[in-house]
Image (cartoon, rainbow, N blue to C red; front, side):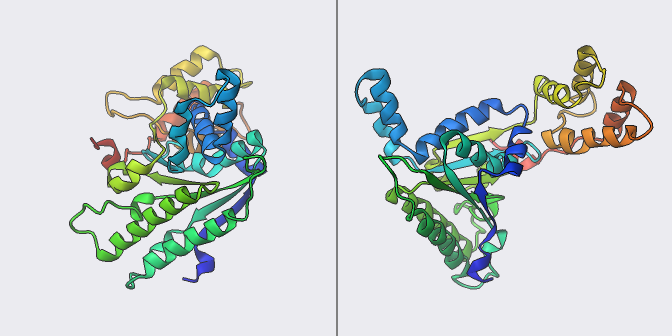
Length: 310
């Protein structure tokens, strides 16, 4: 693999499609809110200085804690809970809110290489070098950056697996070391770069990386209120009452035959499109059609390694 294939995608934000996908993530408002604060502060720590002087009349000691935090987030949770979509798109909201130009680098899974000695380490190091070289060109004005980067590592457990596993290959250990060194180098240089790691297996991530994370966001399947919120948004103006929507939302939760409900993607990518297609073009959408689609569309089985973690 050539170094030009280190990234699956490089996207400039804000981006219309990313904004649309971010807005479509219903039910994650609390995560979005905290993420916006965390990311905004990591990219521009001077925001805290401004806040402190405005609210307390001075630079309070507490804000010093944020100076050396690693600009690393871990998104962990079961499949279909929205973590990867949020990781791919939160930069759009961050860009618009903070008037930042953001480059999203999505790391390629091919970065693991072919297994040749030293290859994975070289590729990981090369990816971080490319991101850092770009970030070094971004100069702050009055202590604030107008541009920043996000480095997304999806399925991070395949690259950042814990070195505590006895069966771990030497080459994989070296790759994890390179990953840690890359994140540390961004922190030490105080570059406007946030690394986001997504995983279904939080316990599989190396402890050194978990300790470095400024925040770990855990994603779960939507509860009944969140499922109702999704149905209310997308089935508005179909003539279905709120009481009927509440019953439908309940039917997408746990029941006697399973102890898990539907994921966000089960509802938005399977159930809702199926409802529309089953009704189109002859019929209007009705409760009977929705109930039938739900009955015939089982939820995704949980990723047990995440579900059973301690």
